[in-house]
Length: 115
Image (cartoon, rainbow, N blue to C red; front, side, top):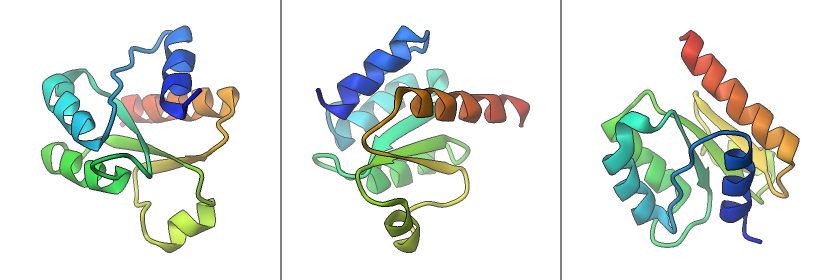
C-alpha cells in the first residue's frame, strides 16, 4: 500500500480529518480550496508534477505560518544537508511507524495550539 493511503488510513482511524492529494499540483489546489480547515500539511519529498519542497514554497506564499511534515525515504542527514528543512518543518522517515506518525502529528498540532 502506498504511503499516502496508509497515512490517510492511520490518521482517519485516530480521528483526524484528512484531505489527500494525488500529486503536487492537486495538493496546492486542495490547499487553496480548504485553507481555513488545514492545520498542518504532510508532504512527500518526491511527488508527481511538483515535489514536496515546491508545494511547500507555494503554500507558504499563501500562508507563511503553515506547519509542514515531510515524509521521505531519504536519510534525515541528507535532507538537512540539502537545506530542505527549515524552522517549522518536521521530518519522518519511511518506512513510517504508526506511533511515530501519530506522535509527530499530535505534537505539531499541540505546538501550534500553544503558539
